[in-house]
Image (tube, rainbow, N blue to C red):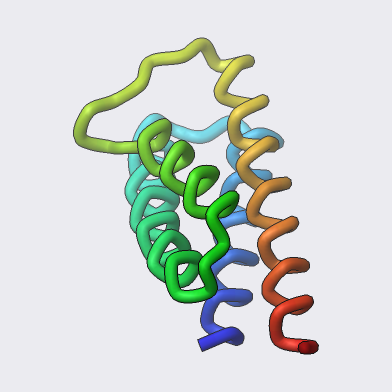
Length: 103
């Protein structure tokens, strides 16, 4: 399960960084919302198993922000900040996952 988490998290980080660096059609951002939200639900589940309360809160907040059903409308510049912040949080969670597996 740990390798699946790292792969999913790495893909999500790449998609978020591509969202900031490149101009895409609106459909890319729609797909990104679905992928990030679904991934965060999985990360919440994994965080509950490891009892990582901080990551449960972070991933729940991210899932609500990227929720494709009840959309949060922000300006493009603010979305860039949200994308990069989300990528950083997910990267930190990868380091946390490695720390847990090293014990």
